[in-house]
Length: 174
Image (cartoon, rainbow, N blue to C red; front, side, top):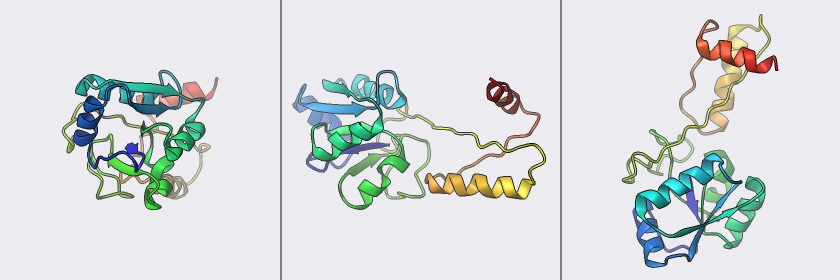
């Protein structure tokens, strides 16, 4: 998801691109560190728009969002869950969801595709695991509750014999 500090005079990704191009080097973006998904999304945005936007790396999302709220940086890509309380209180402006579908938590916020940036997408995934023998109804209910708390409308139960599950099992034994 892409958000901006409310002091930035834009209401869309297209307006942000125009604003950043008209103010080269004066717009900065926060990231929770070099090479993180938010950093790469912002770099892709720079490439797609040709705007000169300054990267300000932080040691994690907490100090990055603190400076975004304080106006030291103007924009930040990260998860809906991180930004939602600040959007709801008007402390941040949501410009787009970097996914193929809108968020249930913020249905009025367009996707990056709807905003004219169809290649600017990033999907966050997480796995919820339980010991073998856990009743399916219990694990399915927990999965749906977790996904709903993140503002996601999609969750997928993977077959126990799938390649994804085998790879996850290998990783969990490390």
